[in-house]
Structure formats: structure tokens, C-alpha cells
Image (cartoon, rainbow, N blue to C red; front, side, top):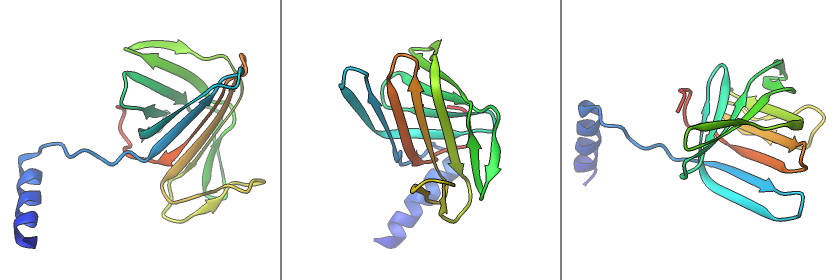
Length: 147
């Protein structure tokens, strides 16, 4: 049985067929009226310029990296630009506060002045929009390519 499974994997790789990644992200959106929505199984792509959160729907949350520094092995972007894409139409989100934390190492690291520890190859973003909506996204990076 193991041999058959191994042959199947090798043949799929040899054919160059895409293999779906396991999406391990979670996005939670809390509106100022108290309502909330949670997206499970969100794919996360971390590129040099941006982070993309892609749920199964035709929506994307795009965090454009800006003003990033490195603190204790974690990339910290305190002033990212935030965009929301629905069916290919991109809209800038007006943001009061936003922080992006990225751990691309193979070790866990604690975010400075926080109780949060990021596992290897994970990231977290916290956004407060000017309308009072709070967005928090956390998960394992699935890709380093633009979706």
C-alpha cells in the first residue's frame, strides 16, 4: 500500500499537476455594531511586497508592506496599506491602526511587548479601520507567490 501511494505521489509530481496546499489561516472581522464573521481555512501568501489572505470566496484581504523592520527575528510592519478585493475590484480600507507581524524562521518567536508567540512560518495582522471594524488574521504561510 505504501508503494502504491509513493508511486501516485511521484507520478503527480512528474506530471507537474498542482497539489493543493493546506490552508491554515483564520480571519476574524468584528464590526463596530458587535457582529462578527470568521473565515476558516484561508490561504495565506507572503511576498516581499505584500501579504494576501484568500478565503474560498472571491474576496482577498491584501496587506501592502510598508515601513517594515526586524525585531527579534520577526518582521514588523507598523504602517501597512490595507486593501480589500472582491471579484477583482480593489478598494482601499481607511485604517486607524494596523500591525503586521511575520515569522519566516523555523523557530517560534514572541512578539516584543506582547504575550503572542508566532510559530515557525506564521504571521499575524491586526487592523482597526476608521469605521471601527477590527480585523485579526493569523495563520501559517501557504505560499510565497502572489495568488
